[in-house]
Amino acid sequence: MQYIALGNLTYNFLCASHWLWQLSPDIKWLNHSLLEMSYTFITFPITTLMFLARYPEGQGLQRILRHYLFWIVLYAGVEIILLMRGNIIYKYGWSLGWSILFDCIMFSFLRLHHKKPLLTLIISVPMAIFWILYFVIPVYVPIEKR
Image 1: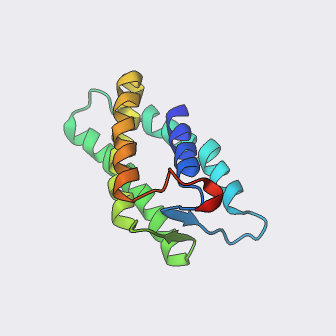
Image 2: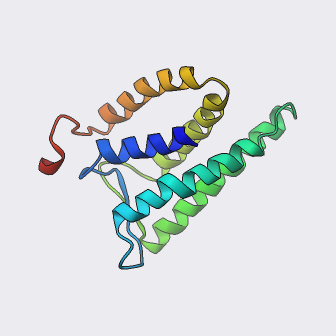
């Protein structure tokens, strides 16, 4: 649960003022920061716990693939609803397709982190560097000047 929270906090820090996607809530008092904090500390940890707690250990490859597919489709479905309602905005080349690919990687990494946390942290670094370079995230520019 800490791994996914750390990942979301890292995204929000590195992409501050240069978000690839941004949530736009309907509720006026619920600004971007409060919404991201609720995702970071409530939504993502709870769904991670549910994903890992119901992981079909030893139940065959087909059952495992269905488990991953369920969670990827769930996350993508929520994002499609947010997109249709105008509650998520994509920028700088990000799209629903990138989100779905990211979900596939994220759920794989969540499982790997559960089994081999150090290895997951090590391979997360080059993965993060890939996203930074591919989407030209200006990490070298101070946040207030982005």
